Image (cartoon, rainbow, N blue to C red):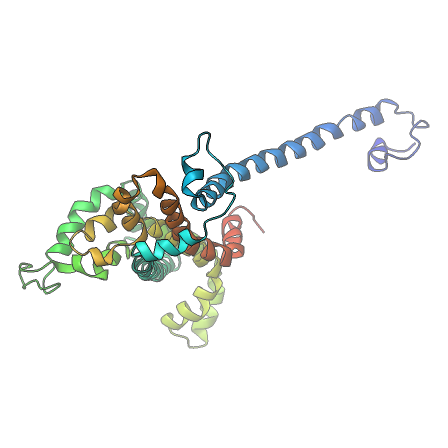
Length: 321
């Protein structure tokens, strides 16, 4: 007597000789739900992908329309003669090159600094035992509940009246402090509570025996951190760098506040936002969308470069091995 399970594995066999006549019927009935479930999964994912991509495609097509196509009613969706010169006008009519330079310098600096501070603090909280460690970790978790806007005014006065900075005296008077320099855009974001917690959670999984073996070989703690810990944490570092870079590239509130007295330090989103009066005419909407397309390109390049590390970092905590 063959077990009914063989019928399910080899559905092409003659199942009529089996005394369990009801088993093949029941097993064949289970396949359609699995096929339907898989099909629904791909349909759902495809719809999600379309929803995510459509705004970018619409922005790109809008940047290529001519003025008559822009003013046509009903609107013309696909441009008959793409206006690629709109991207040249973005750099000719707007200070886009300066905005991009400022954004790259500020965002890259903040990303590098946050990777260093987050990895160092995460390593200390994960691998060293000292008094108050649990209290510090609870404070880090609690600090993530407070919105950034609560720190906006205190940060402004601290950087504005910092002694001996930006022409200030030792009492913090007479100058603009750090607000007239790149430091004013970078320092408020030098430490990230989320980054510290994320790196701490990843470094907990690094074996202590590996670190002890390096100490037995005579390596200093600083050498262990840079030559053993950081290479093992490159997946988490790449994931954190994507999060930090995208957030800081699109940051507007603090950048606008800090650059009110230093317009030459304006970043891309601040520049486009402050130039919104130049785009009130519908005939300039294509130029506005072209500037938005240009502002997105650096983020796309970084994401495509670090995509494989990002996927590994996201799935690392979901798989136990």
